[in-house]
Length: 320
Length: 320
Image 1 (tube, each protein chain N blue to C red):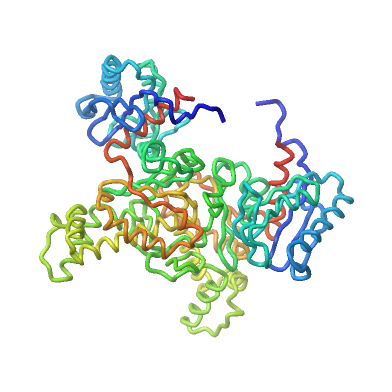
Image 2: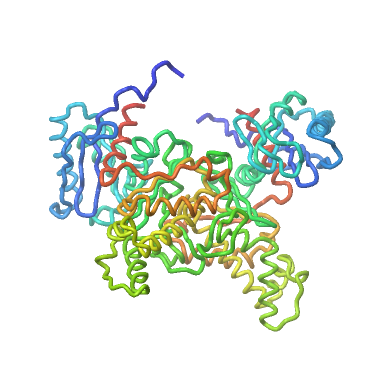
């Protein structure tokens, strides 16, 4: 150990790039902060991969003029990424992006060291390095939204798996005889607690209780508001959602014995009406050895997680 | 890379020690082979920890006389182990063994470098280093017996978890509304496919089919023989056992994306009548990205896994 605490050094200024469904978001990041306006490049506007990467590089150059300290680029993309080779396998939302050496293309065009990573891994890394998972060694990050995603930090490093595909928490089974997931995987967690499924549970429960309700009043957001207002049925919905989530998370904890579970995504905005029954269920399912030291916490970052995480990975290129 | 392939060097000769339910087993190991008679020291015969460690050390000294090349000791014990400190937390089957610095006691008394590890981790490491998991980077080892245990090798190293408690595959849930496990954990895998539960499934299925049967004819071994003899009911039992196991293993694969699952323990002796439906179920639940490169294999070692694995860990003390 040296006398210099690396935590006290200023973080490098890097660029985080997040390939989203309709646009590529680009931001300048220092530590946990996006210090520029986030630029949005609409993917549909550009015909093919080359035109789009050129547009991204133009944005990078323009950001570098206003932030000359920028020293590296991190890119998060949906789908599997060969981290070692810096290749995308397929970008489902951008046609013609199969097997593209995106890392090297960007590095060459921008003149900056570049790292390429899967977007869920970037979001997980943001929480580990800059957010709610800081200071822990083994962290499981879960994102609850339309689907359920995740990322793992094990022994202080992003764990990617043999085909760079680890962390698919939404495909884990909570019922050997349950609803089929997208790959024929019975009991797939995301078919129980995805956005739409939570709404369906809400509609069903309210109708069963003889109360008029539509899908619109049963969004996760509305169900959370109703629960905070004291609605018993809404609480029951969250209790059931928490039970499904607790089942999968308990399996993860018995398998990996992590220090922390960080839960983010739109559904996690429900806050304590979800977290309280989740902790209660997990406490009743885990032996003390696993539960006593386990932290179950809300994610720090929302939509910026991908940008901050990819920028944090980029920072390591120049800190190392 | 050097020109010398470390795999071609002779393995060091080390001692593996396995703390079992009624005896401590001690063997001299080179590579994948136990090259001595396995000495069995009955735990009940010794009053207290000191008398037992003295007996083990006496055995070590005597083995060292016949095998002077012995250069290190590996010890596997049931229950959690603080690997860094070399402490046992509690040895459930040996009274008075809480918080004992067993590694340092043995190292001091024997004069040999010593490593202490949990027994399930030793068995997993044996398969990774010397057995069916050799050559893979991410390996999940499952042991099917009275209970269901496991161990993980991730990125080429034993993964222990934050409290050294990782790998409890038997406590993972296969049903959010299922049978309770030992910690109140609903759907605990080992309550579905432990030895006794397999027998119960067998008895129930045969009785339902109007066939006279006792628990004695429905041991996993008998059910395997019946299946190989073409008994349709026995096949159905294994198909169901495989479904429960596939559910948990699929969750593990979506989470960790391993190269290999190594399955051992008494129940795994059933062989293809278990492995065939297991692979079939997993193939139908996993996306091709996860399944195509996945190896599902039978463990190489049986009762000697603990000795060989602890000895392999000991070998690394002197190879490093």
